[in-house]
Length: 365
Ligand code: ATP
Ligand code: MG
Image 1 (cartoon, rainbow, N blue to C red):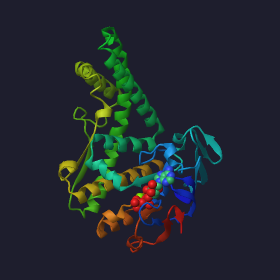
Image 2 (cartoon, protein in one colour):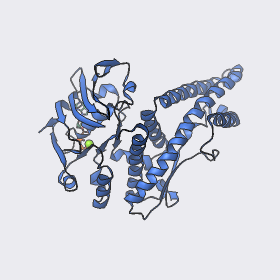
Image 3 (cartoon, helix red, strand yellow):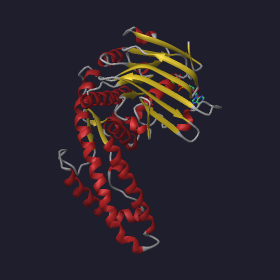
Image 4 (cartoon, helix red, strand yellow):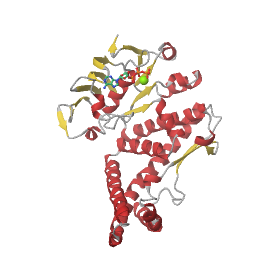
Protein backbone atom coordinates (compact mmCIF):
# COMPACT_ATOMS: atom_id res chain seq x y z
CA UNK A 1 0.00 0.00 0.00
CA UNK A 2 1.43 3.35 -1.01
CA UNK A 3 0.19 6.93 -0.96
CA UNK A 4 1.10 8.94 -4.05
CA UNK A 5 -0.31 12.25 -2.86
CA UNK A 6 -2.60 13.76 -0.28
CA UNK A 7 -4.43 17.03 -0.76
CA UNK A 8 -6.31 18.95 1.96
CA UNK A 9 -8.63 21.93 1.57
CA UNK A 10 -10.04 23.78 4.57
CA UNK A 11 -9.30 20.75 6.72
CA UNK A 12 -8.76 21.89 10.36
CA UNK A 13 -6.10 24.69 10.29
CA UNK A 14 -5.01 23.85 6.72
CA UNK A 15 -6.41 26.04 3.92
CA UNK A 16 -4.78 24.23 1.04
CA UNK A 17 -1.94 21.73 0.92
CA UNK A 18 -0.73 19.00 -1.41
CA UNK A 19 1.99 16.55 -0.41
CA UNK A 20 3.62 14.40 -3.08
CA UNK A 21 4.83 11.42 -1.05
CA UNK A 22 7.90 9.24 -1.38
CA UNK A 23 7.72 5.43 -1.11
CA UNK A 24 9.90 5.35 2.02
CA UNK A 25 9.83 7.67 5.04
CA UNK A 26 7.90 10.96 4.79
CA UNK A 27 8.87 13.24 7.67
CA UNK A 28 6.33 15.97 8.46
CA UNK A 29 8.03 18.43 10.79
CA UNK A 30 7.54 21.83 12.34
CA UNK A 31 6.83 23.60 15.61
CA UNK A 32 3.91 22.74 17.87
CA UNK A 33 0.34 23.46 16.71
CA UNK A 34 1.21 23.93 13.02
CA UNK A 35 -0.94 21.16 11.52
CA UNK A 36 1.29 18.04 11.49
CA UNK A 37 -1.12 15.72 13.29
CA UNK A 38 -3.98 17.18 11.25
CA UNK A 39 -2.33 15.78 8.10
CA UNK A 40 -1.99 12.30 9.64
CA UNK A 41 -5.59 12.49 10.81
CA UNK A 42 -6.76 13.28 7.26
CA UNK A 43 -4.79 10.31 5.86
CA UNK A 44 -6.20 8.03 8.58
CA UNK A 45 -9.80 8.90 7.66
CA UNK A 46 -9.32 7.09 4.33
CA UNK A 47 -9.05 3.77 6.21
CA UNK A 48 -12.81 4.17 6.75
CA UNK A 49 -12.36 4.27 10.53
CA UNK A 50 -13.28 7.15 12.83
CA UNK A 51 -10.73 9.81 13.85
CA UNK A 52 -8.08 8.49 16.25
CA UNK A 53 -8.64 11.69 18.23
CA UNK A 54 -12.33 10.94 18.69
CA UNK A 55 -13.28 13.99 16.58
CA UNK A 56 -16.69 14.42 14.96
CA UNK A 57 -17.06 15.36 11.27
CA UNK A 58 -17.92 19.09 11.74
CA UNK A 59 -14.70 19.56 13.72
CA UNK A 60 -12.68 18.85 10.55
CA UNK A 61 -14.01 21.96 8.79
CA UNK A 62 -11.69 24.96 9.11
CA UNK A 63 -13.16 27.61 11.42
CA UNK A 64 -15.24 30.08 9.39
CA UNK A 65 -15.53 27.77 6.35
CA UNK A 66 -18.51 25.71 5.16
CA UNK A 67 -16.80 22.75 3.52
CA UNK A 68 -13.62 20.72 3.99
CA UNK A 69 -12.29 18.44 1.27
CA UNK A 70 -9.58 15.79 1.42
CA UNK A 71 -8.25 13.74 -1.50
CA UNK A 72 -5.98 10.72 -1.46
CA UNK A 73 -4.26 9.20 -4.44
CA UNK A 74 -2.85 5.76 -3.55
CA UNK A 75 -1.89 2.39 -4.99
CA UNK A 76 -2.43 -1.11 -3.66
CA UNK A 77 -0.74 -4.27 -4.99
CA UNK A 78 -3.05 -4.24 -8.00
CA UNK A 79 -3.90 -0.72 -9.11
CA UNK A 80 -3.99 3.03 -8.56
CA UNK A 81 -6.97 4.49 -6.69
CA UNK A 82 -8.35 7.89 -5.83
CA UNK A 83 -10.65 8.74 -2.98
CA UNK A 84 -12.33 11.95 -1.87
CA UNK A 85 -14.14 12.91 1.34
CA UNK A 86 -16.10 16.17 1.49
CA UNK A 87 -17.31 17.32 4.90
CA UNK A 88 -20.28 19.68 4.68
CA UNK A 89 -22.31 21.31 7.39
CA UNK A 90 -24.60 18.31 7.99
CA UNK A 91 -23.55 15.91 5.27
CA UNK A 92 -20.48 14.01 4.19
CA UNK A 93 -19.79 12.78 0.65
CA UNK A 94 -17.37 9.93 0.18
CA UNK A 95 -16.20 8.58 -3.16
CA UNK A 96 -13.76 5.98 -4.42
CA UNK A 97 -12.51 6.18 -8.00
CA UNK A 98 -15.30 8.65 -8.78
CA UNK A 99 -18.06 6.37 -7.44
CA UNK A 100 -20.12 7.69 -4.52
CA UNK A 101 -20.21 5.54 -1.40
CA UNK A 102 -22.96 5.54 1.21
CA UNK A 103 -20.57 6.12 4.11
CA UNK A 104 -16.92 6.20 5.13
CA UNK A 105 -17.29 2.64 6.40
CA UNK A 106 -17.51 1.51 2.77
CA UNK A 107 -13.90 2.66 2.36
CA UNK A 108 -12.81 -0.12 4.72
CA UNK A 109 -10.67 -2.56 2.79
CA UNK A 110 -9.51 -0.05 0.16
CA UNK A 111 -6.78 1.77 2.02
CA UNK A 112 -4.90 0.26 4.98
CA UNK A 113 -3.02 2.25 7.59
CA UNK A 114 -1.87 1.85 11.17
CA UNK A 115 -1.64 4.89 13.41
CA UNK A 116 0.54 5.19 16.48
CA UNK A 117 0.49 8.36 18.59
CA UNK A 118 1.44 9.24 22.18
CA UNK A 119 -2.28 8.95 22.99
CA UNK A 120 -1.98 5.21 22.42
CA UNK A 121 -0.16 4.95 25.74
CA UNK A 122 -3.67 4.97 27.18
CA UNK A 123 -3.90 1.44 25.80
CA UNK A 124 -1.70 0.35 28.68
CA UNK A 125 -2.26 3.07 31.26
CA UNK A 126 -6.01 3.62 31.20
CA UNK A 127 -9.07 1.48 31.87
CA UNK A 128 -10.47 -1.47 29.86
CA UNK A 129 -12.51 0.70 27.47
CA UNK A 130 -9.31 1.88 25.71
CA UNK A 131 -8.23 -1.71 25.11
CA UNK A 132 -11.68 -2.71 23.83
CA UNK A 133 -11.58 0.31 21.51
CA UNK A 134 -8.19 -0.81 20.17
CA UNK A 135 -9.50 -4.32 19.51
CA UNK A 136 -12.73 -3.12 17.94
CA UNK A 137 -11.01 -0.56 15.67
CA UNK A 138 -8.43 -3.11 14.52
CA UNK A 139 -11.09 -5.73 13.79
CA UNK A 140 -13.46 -3.27 12.08
CA UNK A 141 -10.69 -2.29 9.66
CA UNK A 142 -10.07 -5.93 8.81
CA UNK A 143 -13.58 -7.35 8.79
CA UNK A 144 -16.66 -5.32 7.90
CA UNK A 145 -18.75 -8.24 9.25
CA UNK A 146 -17.25 -7.59 12.70
CA UNK A 147 -18.56 -4.02 12.58
CA UNK A 148 -22.05 -5.44 11.89
CA UNK A 149 -21.84 -7.89 14.82
CA UNK A 150 -20.62 -5.11 17.08
CA UNK A 151 -23.39 -2.74 15.99
CA UNK A 152 -25.94 -5.55 16.57
CA UNK A 153 -24.48 -6.22 19.99
CA UNK A 154 -24.65 -2.54 20.96
CA UNK A 155 -28.26 -2.29 19.79
CA UNK A 156 -29.34 -5.36 21.78
CA UNK A 157 -27.43 -4.12 24.81
CA UNK A 158 -29.09 -0.72 24.67
CA UNK A 159 -32.54 -2.26 24.40
CA UNK A 160 -31.94 -4.80 27.15
CA UNK A 161 -30.63 -2.02 29.42
CA UNK A 162 -33.71 0.12 28.67
CA UNK A 163 -35.87 -2.86 29.62
CA UNK A 164 -33.90 -3.42 32.84
CA UNK A 165 -34.71 0.16 33.83
CA UNK A 166 -38.40 -0.15 32.93
CA UNK A 167 -38.89 -3.45 34.82
CA UNK A 168 -38.77 -1.46 38.04
CA UNK A 169 -41.85 0.44 36.91
CA UNK A 170 -43.70 -2.47 35.30
CA UNK A 171 -42.89 -6.03 36.45
CA UNK A 172 -44.87 -7.55 33.56
CA UNK A 173 -41.95 -6.64 31.33
CA UNK A 174 -39.88 -9.34 33.06
CA UNK A 175 -40.95 -12.01 30.53
CA UNK A 176 -39.56 -9.93 27.66
CA UNK A 177 -36.04 -10.17 29.05
CA UNK A 178 -35.61 -13.74 27.74
CA UNK A 179 -35.81 -12.75 24.10
CA UNK A 180 -33.26 -9.95 24.61
CA UNK A 181 -31.00 -12.37 26.48
CA UNK A 182 -30.91 -14.63 23.44
CA UNK A 183 -30.25 -11.85 20.97
CA UNK A 184 -27.52 -10.44 23.21
CA UNK A 185 -25.88 -13.88 23.61
CA UNK A 186 -25.93 -14.44 19.84
CA UNK A 187 -24.14 -11.16 19.03
CA UNK A 188 -21.90 -11.54 22.05
CA UNK A 189 -20.69 -14.94 20.78
CA UNK A 190 -19.94 -13.51 17.32
CA UNK A 191 -17.99 -10.58 18.78
CA UNK A 192 -16.00 -12.66 21.29
CA UNK A 193 -15.19 -15.33 18.73
CA UNK A 194 -13.54 -12.76 16.43
CA UNK A 195 -11.75 -11.08 19.32
CA UNK A 196 -10.31 -14.43 20.52
CA UNK A 197 -8.98 -15.29 17.08
CA UNK A 198 -7.48 -11.84 16.69
CA UNK A 199 -5.76 -11.85 20.09
CA UNK A 200 -4.36 -15.32 19.41
CA UNK A 201 -2.45 -14.02 16.36
CA UNK A 202 -1.68 -10.60 17.87
CA UNK A 203 -0.12 -12.17 20.96
CA UNK A 204 2.39 -14.06 18.81
CA UNK A 205 3.42 -11.04 16.74
CA UNK A 206 3.61 -8.53 19.55
CA UNK A 207 5.56 -10.94 21.77
CA UNK A 208 8.21 -11.21 19.08
CA UNK A 209 8.25 -7.44 18.49
CA UNK A 210 8.48 -6.64 22.21
CA UNK A 211 11.41 -9.04 22.55
CA UNK A 212 13.18 -7.12 19.78
CA UNK A 213 12.44 -3.74 21.37
CA UNK A 214 13.72 -4.88 24.78
CA UNK A 215 16.77 -6.57 23.23
CA UNK A 216 15.42 -9.98 24.26
CA UNK A 217 15.60 -9.07 27.96
CA UNK A 218 11.87 -9.04 28.79
CA UNK A 219 8.89 -11.25 28.09
CA UNK A 220 5.58 -9.78 26.88
CA UNK A 221 2.14 -11.40 26.78
CA UNK A 222 -1.36 -10.32 25.89
CA UNK A 223 -4.52 -12.39 26.43
CA UNK A 224 -8.30 -11.93 26.38
CA UNK A 225 -9.38 -11.53 29.98
CA UNK A 226 -12.22 -14.06 30.16
CA UNK A 227 -11.37 -16.76 32.69
CA UNK A 228 -14.51 -18.73 31.79
CA UNK A 229 -13.24 -19.34 28.25
CA UNK A 230 -10.32 -21.72 28.46
CA UNK A 231 -10.31 -23.01 24.87
CA UNK A 232 -9.61 -20.18 22.40
CA UNK A 233 -10.80 -22.45 19.56
CA UNK A 234 -14.27 -22.72 21.09
CA UNK A 235 -17.05 -22.77 18.46
CA UNK A 236 -19.43 -19.82 18.04
CA UNK A 237 -22.31 -22.09 19.11
CA UNK A 238 -20.57 -23.11 22.35
CA UNK A 239 -19.73 -19.47 22.97
CA UNK A 240 -23.41 -18.61 22.51
CA UNK A 241 -24.41 -21.23 25.12
CA UNK A 242 -21.69 -19.96 27.47
CA UNK A 243 -22.81 -16.33 27.07
CA UNK A 244 -26.48 -17.20 27.53
CA UNK A 245 -25.69 -19.02 30.76
CA UNK A 246 -23.63 -16.07 32.05
CA UNK A 247 -26.38 -13.59 31.18
CA UNK A 248 -28.98 -15.74 32.98
CA UNK A 249 -26.72 -16.13 36.02
CA UNK A 250 -26.29 -12.35 36.19
CA UNK A 251 -29.99 -11.56 35.72
CA UNK A 252 -30.74 -10.81 39.38
CA UNK A 253 -27.78 -8.49 39.65
CA UNK A 254 -28.60 -6.86 36.29
CA UNK A 255 -32.12 -6.03 37.50
CA UNK A 256 -30.70 -4.64 40.70
CA UNK A 257 -28.06 -2.59 38.86
CA UNK A 258 -30.53 -1.70 36.06
CA UNK A 259 -27.92 -2.55 33.44
CA UNK A 260 -26.19 -5.56 31.86
CA UNK A 261 -23.17 -6.52 33.94
CA UNK A 262 -21.62 -9.26 31.74
CA UNK A 263 -20.57 -9.46 28.10
CA UNK A 264 -18.00 -8.14 25.62
CA UNK A 265 -18.73 -4.55 26.67
CA UNK A 266 -17.11 -5.39 30.03
CA UNK A 267 -14.20 -7.52 28.75
CA UNK A 268 -10.55 -6.52 28.81
CA UNK A 269 -7.05 -7.54 27.73
CA UNK A 270 -4.44 -8.81 30.19
CA UNK A 271 -1.14 -7.24 29.15
CA UNK A 272 1.86 -8.50 31.06
CA UNK A 273 5.62 -7.98 31.15
CA UNK A 274 7.59 -10.80 32.77
CA UNK A 275 4.25 -12.18 33.97
CA UNK A 276 3.08 -9.13 35.93
CA UNK A 277 0.54 -6.49 34.88
CA UNK A 278 2.08 -3.86 32.58
CA UNK A 279 -0.53 -1.35 33.75
CA UNK A 280 0.22 -1.75 37.47
CA UNK A 281 3.95 -2.47 37.43
CA UNK A 282 5.38 -1.38 34.07
CA UNK A 283 7.83 1.53 33.91
CA UNK A 284 7.11 4.44 31.57
CA UNK A 285 9.48 3.03 28.94
CA UNK A 286 8.06 -0.49 29.28
CA UNK A 287 4.49 0.76 28.89
CA UNK A 288 5.49 2.74 25.81
CA UNK A 289 7.16 -0.32 24.33
CA UNK A 290 4.06 -2.44 25.04
CA UNK A 291 1.82 0.00 23.17
CA UNK A 292 4.25 0.06 20.27
CA UNK A 293 4.46 -3.76 20.17
CA UNK A 294 0.66 -3.99 20.03
CA UNK A 295 0.38 -1.40 17.23
CA UNK A 296 3.21 -2.92 15.17
CA UNK A 297 1.60 -6.33 15.74
CA UNK A 298 -1.67 -4.92 14.40
CA UNK A 299 0.19 -3.85 11.28
CA UNK A 300 1.66 -7.36 10.81
CA UNK A 301 -1.81 -8.90 11.02
CA UNK A 302 -3.20 -6.58 8.33
CA UNK A 303 -0.24 -7.55 6.15
CA UNK A 304 -0.80 -11.26 6.75
CA UNK A 305 -4.56 -11.25 6.22
CA UNK A 306 -4.91 -8.79 3.33
CA UNK A 307 -1.55 -9.18 1.60
CA UNK A 308 -1.26 -5.37 1.72
CA UNK A 309 1.38 -3.69 3.89
CA UNK A 310 -0.39 -0.85 5.72
CA UNK A 311 1.04 2.65 5.61
CA UNK A 312 2.56 3.45 9.02
CA UNK A 313 1.42 6.75 10.52
CA UNK A 314 3.66 7.63 13.45
CA UNK A 315 2.60 10.76 15.29
CA UNK A 316 5.33 12.26 17.44
CA UNK A 317 6.59 8.86 18.47
CA UNK A 318 10.33 9.15 18.02
CA UNK A 319 10.80 11.89 20.61
CA UNK A 320 9.57 9.48 23.25
CA UNK A 321 12.03 6.72 22.43
CA UNK A 322 15.74 6.35 23.09
CA UNK A 323 18.04 5.93 20.08
CA UNK A 324 18.11 2.11 20.22
CA UNK A 325 14.32 1.93 20.22
CA UNK A 326 14.03 4.51 17.43
CA UNK A 327 16.42 2.39 15.44
CA UNK A 328 14.42 -0.77 16.09
CA UNK A 329 11.15 0.87 15.04
CA UNK A 330 12.55 2.29 11.82
CA UNK A 331 14.25 -1.00 10.96
CA UNK A 332 11.09 -2.91 11.69
CA UNK A 333 9.05 -0.82 9.29
CA UNK A 334 11.61 -0.27 6.55
CA UNK A 335 9.58 -2.45 4.19
CA UNK A 336 6.73 0.04 3.96
CA UNK A 337 5.73 3.65 3.48
CA UNK A 338 5.87 5.73 6.64
CA UNK A 339 4.48 9.16 7.54
CA UNK A 340 6.11 10.43 10.65
CA UNK A 341 5.61 13.72 12.49
CA UNK A 342 8.20 15.38 14.71
CA UNK A 343 9.50 18.81 15.68
CA UNK A 344 13.12 18.19 14.71
CA UNK A 345 13.69 16.04 11.59
CA UNK A 346 17.46 15.67 12.03
CA UNK A 347 16.89 13.00 14.71
CA UNK A 348 14.96 10.79 12.28
CA UNK A 349 16.85 11.57 9.09
CA UNK A 350 20.04 10.50 10.88
CA UNK A 351 18.60 6.99 11.01
CA UNK A 352 17.02 6.77 7.58
CA UNK A 353 16.62 8.55 4.27
CA UNK A 354 13.35 10.06 3.12
CA UNK A 355 11.51 13.16 2.10
CA UNK A 356 10.76 15.92 4.58
CA UNK A 357 7.97 18.48 4.66
CA UNK A 358 8.12 21.61 6.81
CA UNK A 359 4.67 22.70 8.02
CA UNK A 360 4.10 26.18 9.40
CA UNK A 361 0.73 27.71 10.24
CA UNK A 362 -1.09 25.04 8.20
CA UNK A 363 1.08 25.68 5.13
CA UNK A 364 3.76 23.63 3.40
CA UNK A 365 6.95 25.70 3.40
P1 ATP B 1 2.10 19.34 18.04
O1 ATP B 1 3.56 19.35 17.64
O2 ATP B 1 1.88 20.19 19.25
O3 ATP B 1 1.51 18.00 18.13
P2 ATP B 1 0.72 19.74 15.48
O4 ATP B 1 1.51 20.44 14.42
O5 ATP B 1 0.59 18.29 15.38
O6 ATP B 1 1.33 20.19 16.88
P3 ATP B 1 -2.14 19.86 15.12
O7 ATP B 1 -2.66 18.93 16.15
O8 ATP B 1 -2.05 19.33 13.75
O9 ATP B 1 -0.71 20.43 15.55
O10 ATP B 1 -3.06 21.17 15.20
C1 ATP B 1 -2.71 22.41 14.62
C2 ATP B 1 -3.73 23.45 14.97
O11 ATP B 1 -4.95 23.19 14.30
C3 ATP B 1 -4.11 23.60 16.43
O12 ATP B 1 -3.60 24.80 16.93
C4 ATP B 1 -5.63 23.60 16.44
O13 ATP B 1 -6.15 24.62 17.26
C5 ATP B 1 -5.95 23.87 14.99
N1 ATP B 1 -7.29 23.39 14.59
C6 ATP B 1 -7.88 22.23 14.93
N2 ATP B 1 -9.11 22.13 14.35
C7 ATP B 1 -9.28 23.26 13.65
C8 ATP B 1 -10.34 23.77 12.84
N3 ATP B 1 -11.48 23.06 12.64
N4 ATP B 1 -10.19 24.98 12.25
C9 ATP B 1 -9.05 25.69 12.43
N5 ATP B 1 -8.02 25.28 13.20
C10 ATP B 1 -8.13 24.06 13.80
MG1 MG C 1 0.75 16.77 16.80
